[in-house]
Image (cartoon, rainbow, N blue to C red; front, top):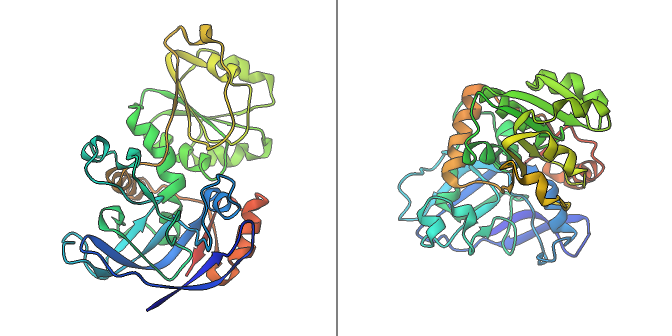
Length: 331
């Protein structure tokens, strides 16, 4: 049986209708009928082969919501008709130290959802059932899709680095990741400060839950020296990171989740036990937890919805940063 999708047939090309033969379902796999799929900047990097790992035809998409269509004979926890979400990861080895610890995203044999295999800009997908995460009934599908990449990317560091309600948290960048990070940190009970180069985002940042707003271009940033316990950078550009290190308290941490840029910090700036860290996506168990948390605290991704056949229009708007803040395809 054929699966209808939209694929890039070569590097940097527009996506075209593309049919591929559905693979046989393995015993531990699940087939999901896709209803929604978010568009992430990572999809665009893959289309353009910016990371040198793309193979064509390439079917992007890794913020997938859909319903279970068929299950392999060893799959007991998912049933036909259940709504599930699939993020960046579709499989892992299952037996390395990280898989056994429930940190499958760190597995050296992890299988991305849309690298070397069909992704979510399609009518259906087959993945290891462990990576198809049940979606709470009160979480809307359009809202849930961006949580599978943008959402988990900022939720994961708040959890694994033990951010507490008493902490002061800074969020650098109010975009696809940052607008969710503000909401999560606020729901954690933290004092939240949003940093942005766009002054007209102040009102929106505060509406999302930020207590303070600081323009990166403003010298008022200096009044926050030694102030923050934790700062998350969601941006993809180089900033003066020495400034942000100076804003950390002793034992404070600057965490990078944006996939780009570089950092050059004098070692003496770190001698007060200041920490620089990174984080990428999250495990299936963390995605499950995030879904429950988002549903309970009404975390809302700001989205713009496009029909699948308008995928190229949607991609162009994402490229030009004209979507606030996440584009979602309706299949």
